[in-house]
Image (cartoon, rainbow, N blue to C red; front, side):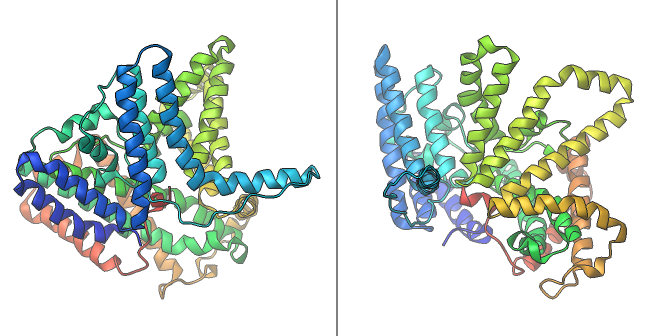
Length: 486
């Protein structure tokens, strides 16, 4: 089994209470044991994989720091090979095995296929692998001292709030915090709990409500009308955002209660005016990781190609970003589509400036936001579907759906979970409007601070309403966090 949001909330207060009761010198050990127990709730023996990579990178960090010349690069390379090797075995072996076998068959080359490995993907493998790799790379670059305390380093990789779905932290931000004394600070506790409440609301009330409605459509799109498919496609980015940003809020909030500060992972992505800006606002810890450790080195290598070098670098980066999300062709297509959009951003800078000056800025901004959202929505089809043919079928349904919208009738959509889909759909629209309104106010006036200045009755009335809604929706098809699979 894996932790869902409510199991996390049962686990969190016990860990936090013990953390503050313990002397400082034992707190790292307590958090490490708690993180191990948290991870072992999935498949206990998989912790051996994590311990292997921790041991490799701990030793590699010290060797890199003490070495000179080409030996530094050799130790870094061995560390990266070990990390990527574990990732390839558990996440990509079957994918590459199947595709190589198929290519050989098409070329009429006789070959004995390698055996298929049958196992569940270790929880959060891509996340903690990237976090571990950032440590050795930063030691190699001289931006981080090698950590001599093996327990502190293990905790850096395994810190339970962000272990399975990020944010992907850097050693400069997180490692030193495990040595610092964190007192019980009322303001941090309250702010952290509010952030966790908001994250849980986004996950349980909004994301799961959308998921319950649209999951059957993505499982079997042929059984639904083009208009229903179109609605599911448009709603999915909101489900994905509320699910993943909800987890990030819970992780940041849980850490803040104990005095730890994790990096922000989302910054209002649906107001982005182009795909480049979108990825600066969406899954920030991954996009900055890719930029620092993949795109920038590739850009330097291709610098003699001018802007075409940047385009080559960005497409390679997002091809690999697609594969990072999953070992299937639909994720590869997702990465390629985003790489194409980013290439357009590079090539069209002058054209977009002319367009912005030719029409009024507000109109241009609104059109840019809408088109960016629609493009990401289209690319997200391949993020959500279970196979590439299903993605192509859904993509092909969008044209007929736009025509059918002229004859659209709510009553033609199937019922789900005892609720009329019309009511369910309208409720979801209301939730999305509430979400976007809250985020708009947060950008303009800092909604949390604004509420603090209002009456106790209004403030706690809102908090209790959110709690009641979370409890009320918790039994209606609660779903595992989407990014737990990565």
